[in-house]
Image (cartoon, rainbow, N blue to C red; front, side, top):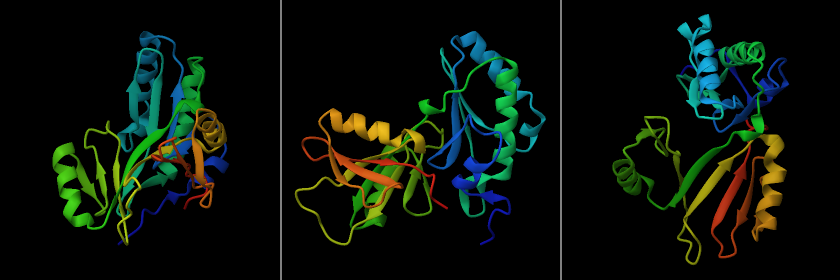
Length: 221
């Protein structure tokens, strides 16, 4: 299968000039522009929509009363990821926001993913696809076609795990926010299960053993 020719890694994105407003989480580059009012947010959204680059590549915008969340992602033959088009568009959007004197707050972005451990993924995935109304991607992922709900990822189990939960939450945060999020969870009564895979993810649990992974994409390819 052919690869996206202009694919870049999260690390390459963050090392580029002009993208300090942005953080790579999950599969895309995101930021939040703190507009303060819905009217100013609509003004920013309109200005972004007028960029000429959007003819070939467009962002996802979430307009709320106090800000606009922007997500950039490229879907190529080998799946979604980042490309040089996202890098260029991030710079253009940041320039528009600066012109309007709207500050960026990249600490306000995150992606939540639900991970389901399964012994027979082909047997259980169709059920979840039906009840969620999601689309299948790659045989182990379910995505909301509306782009709003949390993605579901099915992780292959080799053997049953009694007395341990088989669904956990993945919370993708900006790489420079991970330690603060972990510290807050531990202070709230959580427990660090393992940091073996850090900085890709840290596994924590609540007082009853329900698990969550605090994840970043900064070191991933």
